[in-house]
Amino acid sequence: MTPTAAARTAGAVPVRFDRVSKAYGEVTAVDGLTLDLHPGETVALLGPNGAGKSSTLDLLLGLRTPDSGTVRLFGTGPQEAIAAGRVGAMLQSGGLMEDVTVGELVRLVCGLHPEPYPVDEVLARAGVARIAGRMVNKLSGGQEQRVRFALATAGHSDLIVLDEPTTGMDVIARQAFWATMRERAGQGRTVLFATHYLEEADANADRVLVLHKGRLLADGSAAEIKARAGARRISFELEDGADPAALRSLPALAALDITGDRVRIRSHDADATVHAVYGLGLHPRNLEVTGLGLEQAFVALTGAEEAEAA
Image (cartoon, rainbow, N blue to C red; front, top):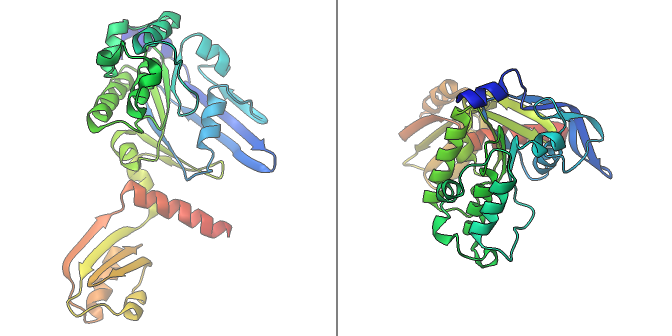
């Protein structure tokens, strides 16, 4: 962490939600949300459509006012923290100024930030230096996203908030983006991003928050979220074909899929399930037992919550 970042973040809680709720008519988008984010954390915000991710980010950025509870950024209200230049944001909603060039727009935002980076550095980091002279309304979707990236990182912000940040970016742009975010987190900044690319959350987040119907369903590292799902994947082939009825009788079975000779199982106790496969007199080939990926764990957790609520 740089001395400047260390001085600014010492003793501060970058984000604090204290029993925050927000409803739109009869729909509760955020329901009693309580959490703290800490300096230097990279945090992924996950949830199915309608989970409350966008509403949570709107409340964090002061774009919406909570019906109850409080949102504090660095001990102050969102508007105060943003006005002080402590927050950089990259949102899906909202357009870019059109009747300017990329370079003019980035220069404007750098000029407004209390602690800006050099304009040329911002353009180069976001991969838009070559299109600095292009009009914003002539950009492709991926180019627009890189410009939003440039605007979000135009200055020394202690909190960076990102909503689906890599949508439309190519592989090289994504790699450059995450390299910059890792650099920022290493300097003591807090990075919060909402994404549907769960492999990105798995690879880049120190901490994963899973929202479901406005509530915090899970909070931990990607490894902890996977472990909480409490299941492993078993895959094998059967030369003589599979008997669905026999396989459904296996112990600790969470899910079963049969495609031709290939059997895929999700099990709460892989050892017991595999032992029972042999106990049925079956001779599996190419047997594989693996842990759930973050995507499968996410589906398992939210699916279990839906089943419990039904």
